[in-house]
Length: 434
Image 1 (cartoon, rainbow, N blue to C red):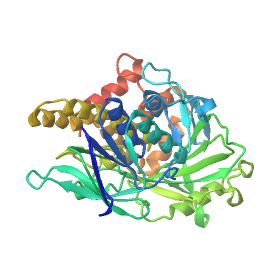
Image 2 (cartoon, rainbow, N blue to C red; image 1 turned 90 degrees about the vertical axis):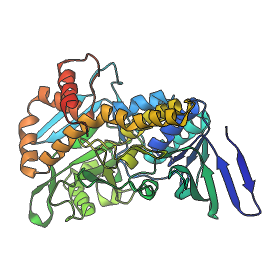
Image 3 (spheres, one colour; image 1 turned 90 degrees about the horizontal axis):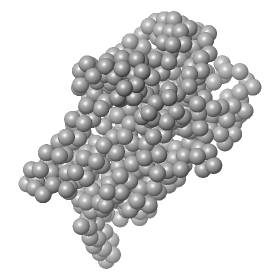
Image 4 (spheres, rainbow, N blue to C red; image 1 turned 135 degrees about the vertical axis):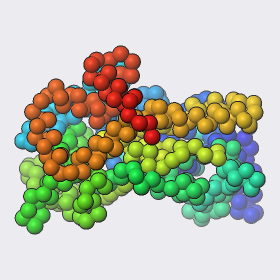
């Protein structure tokens, strides 16, 4: 079903496939892997080359772990993965360790891996499955059918010499992150009524590098100018198992201070307040402080239109409760691949389109109510007084915090499960599915 034509004299390469996936991050590589596993011809286009850096906490919950297992990736400690038992929560003078819940739907452990290595592992796994990966392929825009307005391919600049290239396929997946130039070119703009966050992180050489819990600080204090002000968001400390710790903070735009502070300076001040023996000092910093946006709660819609499907950050899939993006990027990629496989098996244009129109409905069925709850949560904790009260009162009740862990990490058994699972699943079902 695919063909490739090469015109070296003109410096133009034109290739066709069943599906084009733009972006080889977790969303794109997962999509390409599952499409290739189903026997489709897939082009996976990545604007940079591997290995490459991405701003991230590098901590993976059991939801992401399940996706890696589904892709056949060896997540053993022998293969360089650091396993974690759960989440350590610090705030209100309380230090509480909560193990990941024991569920039938998800593993009972999480993982840590640097994104420079992690993303390449996923892209190579997609390649092994049969996807055709083009690195240093910077997609510049969509190719549209003049009659229907549907996307039928993309234009790009390929290689160091930036050779013009056209790739064609009846379906294109936008996995090009929060900026998603491809979605913007198709007229899909960010919804201003959905929350956004930012994350800033760096790495330090530290004796805490092999910590087997992800650590979350619920009280993030701005101690500059001799004042002590509670900020919306949270800080994290994740041991990397390689002699370093990933230390960072996530902030929500529900705070009046969102656009007023220099978050790099806030992170530096927060690190300076920690015990010196942990090593989070300027001389131990191994990487510069970098930041990235966290597009949350379906902040770009529709997730399917005119031959284009949105996955991961391009579709605003980040969990508003905890800022987790990788699990939802990979899950949406798997869902999109399943829809595409079924659509391309239809024998009529109308049948294919009906199958593709199911994609946004499936996403809303799976995440819509839960993300609505998350949007309400974001508004609440945008008030520092509410955040402080919740931290001081909640952390002294371990049973309540186990419920909160399940809610924030979205870790429940969808069928059966315990009373906590049934309450959380029930709340997500009755919440508006927007």
